[in-house]
Amino acid sequence: MTKFSLHLNVFWAVLAAVVASPLSVSAHNVGRSFEQEVGNYFIDIGSSELSIRAGEPAAFDFDILAKDSKEPAPFASVWVRVEDGRKLLFAGGIAKASIGKTVMTYSFPHKGAFTLSVRFQSEGGSLAEASFPLTVEQPLSASGTQKFSFSRDLIGGGLAGLIVGFAASFMFRKRTAV
Image (cartoon, rainbow, N blue to C red):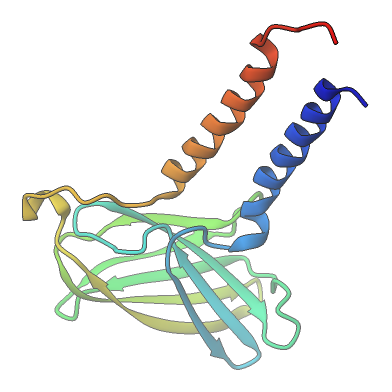
């Protein structure tokens, strides 16, 4: 086996590991997960951020699993409510996505304590419902400092840069006779 083909095999192995790793590490990437068992179901809500901040969009993905098998349970929609204790801020139904996760993006208007309530519904009625307390922090811009935060985009961009750089180093290097 030549040195070039060995490097090419290593490249493809690294590429396969990078592409497959997000699929096996976590269902919610770098964000938080809110979980609760309700009856025969396991409700799993993921957020895109570790720290939810006022005025900054946070994505929430919604999933419901069979309690015993942890396999996805079929549902038609999820009803979502966001309250801050004093008043209702959002209430609405979200149809199950035909491809990928069922997701909602929401920006909380201020810092403080909130409640995120969900009710999964099937064609026959309600499957399960749960409420989760959320603490929303003040926005970074209000504190006057910008803190470094790992995010899915930063990690993905870094990995993509490494892959492209690795591939380019093989494509543009000078070949020498052995």
